[in-house]
Length: 380
Ligand SMILES: Cc1ncc(COP(=O)(O)O)c(C=O)c1O
Image (cartoon, rainbow, N blue to C red; front, side, top):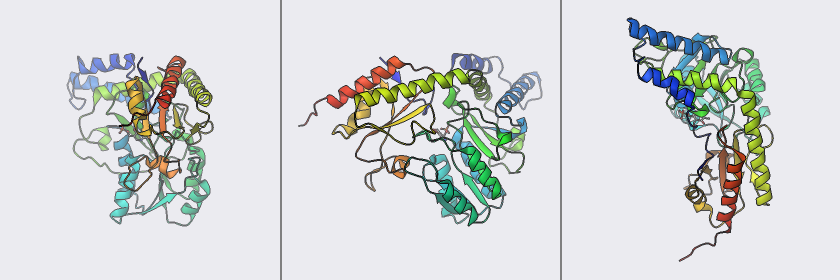
């Protein structure tokens, strides 16, 4: 049996998305910047895709900039804000994705910003009192806090954070890579200036995403050259990627209610199965509270087979993602698990689900995990 529980890393393309993309890999190959009929056809397709994408999050089409994915969109939001909005202070947390942390840390090293790290509680939630304090005691800030954490699944109360940022006139970026297409988002009712998307997290293609830039602010492009993306990102568009992204988003939002309840049920079934199997099991973050329904980060009992766990699961056909807290300075563990103080001696595994999974697969994965724990340790 082959079981894929790594949908927070990437998802399988939906066959309907493949059909949509193939059209633009074959017959519809015009360059959207060409003025002849071939080009006009792909130009119209991209414009319509942009309108559909914008409508899903209640944005204007002019607020959507297609990018090469979540990393580029995060970098663009950060660098454009610091370059163009005269901001000298940024706030982020230790559990952000590296696509956010690394550019901010680089800006701080260059002396271009002062960087404040907001406290994270042991359940993985952001300490909002500390955020208020940081906003109060510093000049106008750029705030980057992710909507949902890709490793532990914690959800940020985005409405509350956006209201706080509004109170202090801060610019807010939220990495929504794990939540776009999984939750309904309405940028009009939120005071959020930037959100980010990667299509491969919701059965769309890799290498394409978008940045939402609120039309309340004006920033300049990072990539310069042609006039594509209203001159916000030069370069011939990834036409089939963009068409695949729009189709995947249409499908996700058309089926969102049933997918949410189906996948949430899988997650809670797995929690139950794991509790029945491992009396000492714990869950990193706030698994049963404010948490992504697609992610379950399991903190397993201590074992002498810790190093071999993912390898053994892989041999049994179970694909999951690992992560353990850093136990020493030289051991590069998960920065997220380290930040929330997860026990480094216990193995942590991230299971992440999609509509393609079922309960039989969960039974299989848990039984394989159990038998790996029961294996005698082979010593020389
Ligand atoms: C929360 C989050 N942000 C950003 C990214 C980066 O997206 P991409 O790999 O598409 O550039 C990812 C993907 O792993 C992610 O989970």
